[in-house]
Image (cartoon, rainbow, N blue to C red; front, side, top):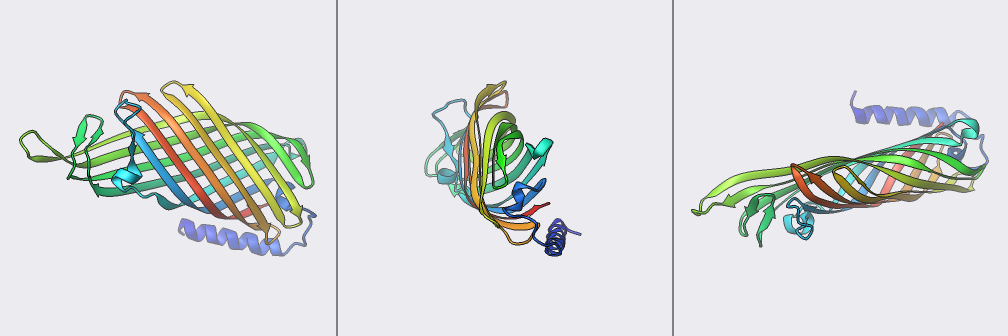
Amino acid sequence: MSIKASLLLLLITITISGSLYAEDYEYHPQLSDNFIVSLGAFQSDQGFKINANGDTGANIDFGQRLSVDQSATLFNTQIFWKFGEQRKWALGAQYFSSNSTGTRTLTEDIQWQDLNFQAGTSVEGGIKMAISRLFLGRSFYKDERSDFGAGIGLHIFSITASVKGNIILGDGTERFEESRVSATAPLPNIGVWYKFSPAKNWLIHSRADWISAEIDEYDGTFWNAIIGVNYQAFRNVGFDLSYQYFTLDLGVDKPNWRGSADLSYTGPMLSVTGNW
């Protein structure tokens, strides 16, 4: 059975089982249940500025100069588990990734590491990015219709950027070359969340993670924030419309990559949520 078929079967099972129970909540059940799972489609406006030459002023805008996709639909997964006395502790996780490419005939030279791709040649650029988030927090104010908490977490960024195409040699001949840089950067963060249920089946929620730190080979600043509204259609199933804002400004000082990455992923997200 495929992953998509398995997820569809799980959703149908949760929906049917949820409809068998009477509504046992006065406010949105995500505030009182232990587990929350979210599967969403994220319509992202993307920005990629990468430097692989060690010169902070030499960023290449992959969208503008190499026609790398600046809009894409990404899949986003989130999990939230509340535990402990009065369910005041919470463990959360999030994952989304993108793989974008573009091809363009250059109108000006591009210097990428030790390669010079000259104007008039056709070049392909590519960006792969995966974000994994783990977060441990505690509710500091919690009642039947609201929840405010804060904590610490860890974001793991996996980035690969590549440029390939023909370079022109000194004798006028061309040779195909490809050069890529990659990094896996773990950055800790602090974060807060707030949830409020104005009516029985409605929930307004927000979350923000932030850090600015220098760790070993990496010097980074990022924001990862979500704000949205959830409608509880069944006892264990809801539908969520939110807005994701993610930006990363990362400096890298590795033997195979001395440079920086300035990335952004922002846009609306539609999700199906399960809670129990």
